[in-house]
Length: 436
Ligand code: ADP
Image (tube, rainbow, N blue to C red; front, side):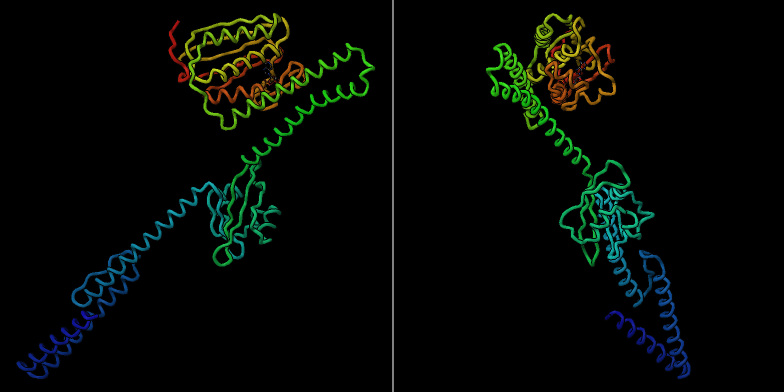
């Protein structure tokens, strides 16, 4: 403020001095004229600077303030400083807003802001996908006009938002959403949506698994219970031979239950936190020899079983698990190949790693079943699997073991002609592979 007063007073002093000098040397009239001209010039200068100020205030924010001399120069400098501070603040605010916007857009959950009258104020990309909305079209529209599922409308209007709502998306099939409403500000609400389809699928799988296990265990248990009941009710009515037959059948069922429980335990150990496979050095030639002998033993002369080795070497992994996976495939070939069929076990090493294949001339599988063969309890022919002592878990175990060894299973098959189950192992799992 002081500089303004100083400026005005110095201008007035100068004017008074010039006017007094004019009056002294040229007479009072000239003194008065000089004073009036001086006042008019001063006024004109002030009006000119005021106009510049008004013009500047109409320019876009951030335009530099004009320059001027004297007290106006000070005023403009002060304005310039303030305008720079407020411009910087605006910039900081808008970049913070932009960052918030970008972060909200990148969120894995959907976010939707609703006004006090439940119209959409802001929406992120995920919420657009979850609810099938479009921010360019739907901002300002009542949310219940666009998300019309009765459970959502009821949840929004009931006002009890302690528990989230689980709903299926009306716009995308197979999408299950967990929706939570959070009130904030003056009667505003935030709607958070999360895609829980994967969790729901896992939960369904878990339920199916429990139902399957219960069913698989109940069947042999019912048979065993039936035999025992028959014997308890009338042991004396049966010949010793019949009793022995019942007992043998009951024993078969109990071994089936034992196998099922063993497979379930193996699967659970593989699935739940079992440590990564030990990096044992598995001698491939010895392993193949062992699998070949086991397969011949299982076949008991009903099939021709051959072993072909195209390269050998050392495999890195868990010896027990690899043996279990390979022999599972070989035993499936025996079980699903009618008598007189041929089973070839092939080990081949190439530039992409190594491959263990089991080829059979058995009953084969319709290709539509192939993608599901490694699901737990999935069987193409339930009766045949049971007859041959299957649990429906073999290929699920194989898949787990292979995944733990970064390997994968490829199946090709033709119904009635036979199948090839191949395991592809990555080069990192192989050591010392002398070319033959
Ligand atoms: P299972 O104990 O029933 O054999 P698996 O998980 O080992 O269970 O196999 C799943 C299903 O895949 C089997 O029920 C069978 O229908 C099919 N399958 C597996 N291997 C063969 C094969 N070599 N030839 C034909 N079908 C097979």
